Amino acid sequence: MRLGTAALLIAILGVAGLAYLLTSEEFGRPAQPERAALRSPITWESPVGAPHRAEFTICSGPIRANCVVDGDTFWFEGVKIRIADIDAPEISEPACADEAKAGEMAKARLLDLLNGGRFRLIAGWRDEDRFGRKLRVVSRGDVSLGELLVREGLARRGGGPDRGWCS
Image 1 (tube, helix red, strand yellow):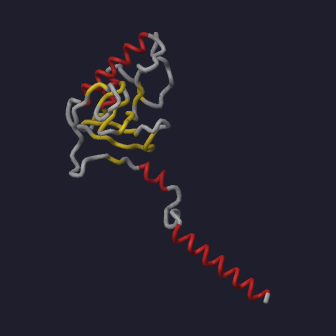
Image 2 (cartoon, one colour):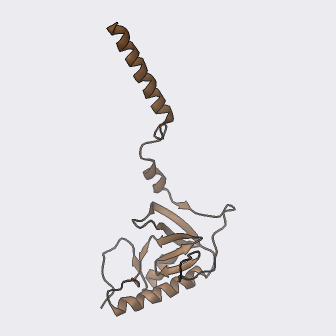
Image 3 (cartoon, helix red, strand yellow):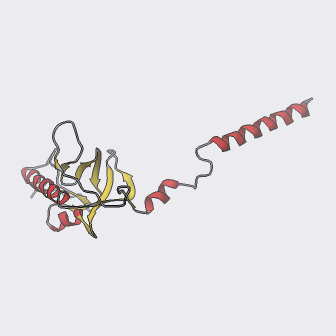
């Protein structure tokens, strides 16, 4: 009787294990799919493959569709996007008047750039930042709009030293 009970228990555990494998979300997935998926850039495009175009404004009020928050953050089609390759001066909590002024200039320039024609949103190695904003490189042709802001002195390359904007 002990042998029969042990065999029954092994059979039940085997069936339970098989059921877990077949119904588990992990079954059949490669190890660490997030890393594999995030290594290759993805262009977030319309179904026909055309670059995006929208009429942007400065964000105000509770509705955020197509508007610019600051020099490195904007809303597009209701999604908050952080430009991944730059860091612009803060305007919500600037450390000094110089940073506030530089932040307003960066925001105005980003508004002009976004309204200047079609653009692409390209995902990098991370999809979102810690605040839930989508991280995207914004480009027109082969030129990063973030890089244009850096060249114009209105932003810094992302991932660099964290220096202030105050003199």
